[in-house]
Image 1 (cartoon, rainbow, N blue to C red):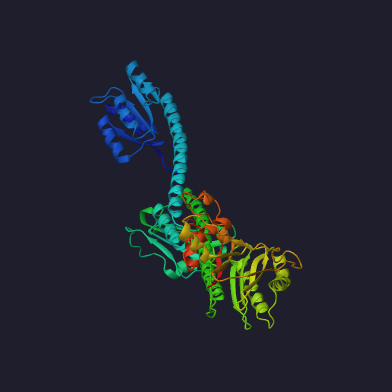
Image 2: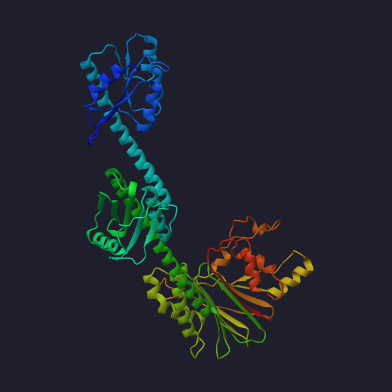
Length: 563
């Protein structure tokens, strides 16, 4: 009987009678590789030296150790071995126990019939081969799953592309007992200049190892064919070279080169298939890592570009205006992201009028910032004209200039625009769907609070003349509002990032209940009444942001205070 590869199955006969040993040896030597032992002790020594047997034939009655006891000692070490018991006595109790415990496949009574014994042994050998085949298949499956899990767990520990390349080559090299392993990435349709290598610490020196030029030529061959290449020599020079392309969908990612020398150079076909399966999974992980690296690089580039855009927008809003006697003008703008859609403008006309504006482009981020820059450019053009226009006329001109771009991109702009004339104290304003401007006497508020404590009769003047936002209709038809500012009064423009911020908590203040509610203009008024003289917009904004760990919208403040 053979194992399918030309080698005979191993069989051991154990009997304390020399004649029986010789007879059994002659009976099975043509079909099996037969070992003989004249005692259980000697049989155990042979098993230690030779390893697993396909069949064990043992006599029952032997000195020192009987057959069932001997066979019982082999079950744990060699579970696949088929055990046959020879007995000249009917020891029913021992036999039943041995058979039930799985120690004995069959028993034969002495003297045996040679034909019957041969049939039993042939059946035992066939049973062994079936068991061995199924056991090997199961072990290969378990080994494949175990190796696959181990390799993929190691590979997926890192999303960094370069570290994953090194992890792949080291993990595969260690798992498959490679003497040397190399992974060469593919860039476009060429081999990348950088290689990632693994070399076993105990690798034997191989005088016949292929040169780097030979390896390079083989890699170029795989680059063209995209097929696995195996070169295995088993004469005096025991070597194996295996090159596997790592591809995912249509992307050729890398080439894996595995070199084995010496005792580990015989790689069975199932291990080659396993390595190809591991290579497929490694290619998938490598593709994901490459995609992750590309996204990280793009994110870094985007952050760099956004930083440039932020600086440009900051410079665009970083305005300076001359000191104007009797007036205090302040402005601040903080985008929710790197750039935003809020903007403000302070323009002192050569004729003496002071223009103030706060606008808010719908949306956030880069698109809003681009429209914000366009809006400021058009606004400055309109304000710099020779004649001083009415604010509602300026709004109409802005709407006409920006309408096409706003409509095509489904955007709109809210804006409050005011013109203050210092010589007369007149304030003329127009509002395109923006938050109501506020006018109040901050000096009077502080005076009343100092005299009455919490009692306050001063009310804010919300300027409620308002039209629709820019970019909604072809013609903007809002009206202008007019009033006169007196000494001590403040004109304040804000964006909705202020009024829609989370309201700070104040115990005992009924008008500001609930830390999760929006501030709204009423809540903003409560904060304004708590500000010292002179009004400081930076301090006011700090109060607004105190209970808002995450800024959800752009925040802008602009004030004009008559001293």
